Length: 211
Image (cartoon, rainbow, N blue to C red; front, side):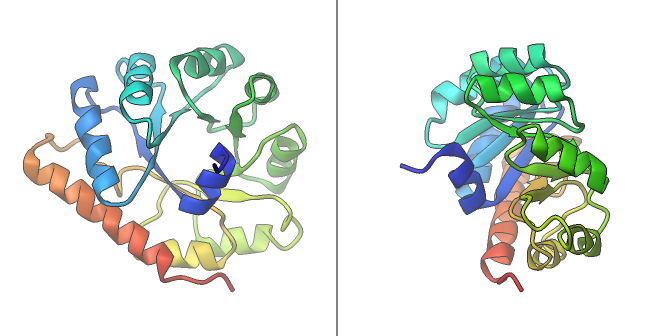
C-alpha cells in the first residue's frame, strides 16, 4: 500500500475546496472523484472546516482528505484529530511543520523565495507549496539550485498551462477555482462541470512528460 506522500506524488493533483457550504462539499468531492481526482484539501477558513474534514474522512476512505490554510501548530493538531492525512500552509511556520511531522502526517508548507523554500524543507516539509505560482519558468529557475526539493506550485494553474509546470519539474499541483468555483450555486449542471474540469486536468498531466 502506498504511503500518503507516495499517493500525492503519484496522483499529483490536490483539489482545493475553499469556502464551499458544508452541505455541498460531499457532492463536490464525489464529482472530483468521478473526474479522476482523489486528493482534496479543505481549507480551514471554510465554514465548518474541521467537521467537514471529519465527515469526508469517514465517508470517503478511498480518497485522501487533508487540511489547508493551516496557520498554527494547534490548527494542525486539530485538523489531524479530525482525520486530515496531510497539512498544507500558505507560509513557513516551523512550529506547524514540527507538530505535523511529530504526529506522523505529511507536511506541505508554503513558500516563495529560495530562502523560504530551503527553510521549509530543512525544517521537515515533505513537499514545498510554491505560492503564488506565477509561472512555470519560475519553477524551472528555482529547480536549478534546488532540484532536490519537491515543489508543488499552487494558484493560477489551468488545464492549458499545467503541462508547462510539469515540464518545469513540479511534482504535484494545488488547484482551486480552476477546478471548483464555489461562487457558483451547486447544481447538477455545476457538479458535471466540476467532473469535466477534473478530467481535463488529469488528461493534461497524463499527456505530459517531464523534460
